[in-house]
Image 1: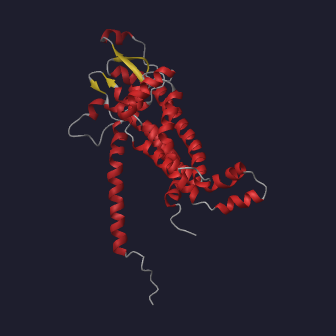
Image 2 (image 1 turned 120 degrees about the horizontal axis):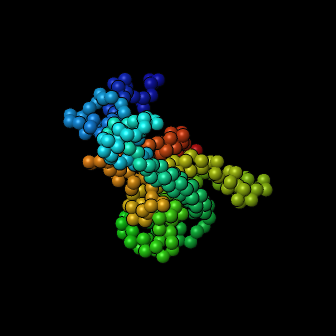
Amino acid sequence: MSGASVTEASSGQKWIAGVLVIAYALITIMPLAWILLTGFKTPPDSIAYPPKVVFTPSLEGYVNLFTTRTRVTPETLAALPPPANFAEAIVRDRGMVIAGRSKFGERFVNSVVIGFGSTALSIVLGTLAAYAFSRFKVPLKDDLMFFILSTRMMPPIAVAIPIFLMYRQLGLSDTRLGMILLYTAVNISLAVWLLKGFIDEIPREYEEAALIDGYTRLQAFVKVVLPQAATGIASTAIFCLIFAWNEYAFAVLLTSGTAQTAPPFIPTIIGIGGLDWPATAAGATLFLMPVMVFTIVLRKHLLRGITFGAVRK
């Protein structure tokens, strides 16, 4: 009998698979790379045709992203003292002066607070609900699970007006708390379904042994179940954060100032004479970073979570 494994790929198959993976990676990363490069272009370079791949880098996009500017006459510009920093120098080269800070920083902070806050709340509530569905006899369990999942299928626009009227009556419009509660309500269905599958794979014998040793049900849940479900919790947290981070429809409808997040704000970055593509690209680049870092930090848990339960005992 041959010692070679029937499942081992040949060198040709490995070469083809490698080429396909590299091609897919290049196609996937190309738009992100173009956005990153556009953030370091000047406005004329960003709309040049044919598109410029080689250009002189500039921080004008990031300066425009974090500032508001106003155009002044050449006489007024000549009477001003020398620029105090590189940002003022860049703006004055365009015949403008800095009028103040933009609201991008505030909108970005709102995204962080609302996105991570709703994700944490979804994970806490989803884990508790998933544990109850997995371990206890719940009447009409299958019907309840389907009802929970069905809320995820519902298009947001179908409930946009009722939620808007309800939030206006409750005073939750344009508040961080209101957005956190709303995103939690939307994400909790996904969290329950994903986490129940992970908890189902954890042997009950671990908890029974802990209960025999004198642990309470809560202690067994915290010290036995949660560590075993860490991979599932990390995977679910990533999916919940991606939704809350990128959500646009509810953010446009329910926020306008205090609690507005970055997705509705970035398209409003309008420069003198048209859309400021470098500033828009700079905002999109910065907006990508938190989710990217969060996913990279949890990447090992994500890979384990995706394959969790694939090999039975």
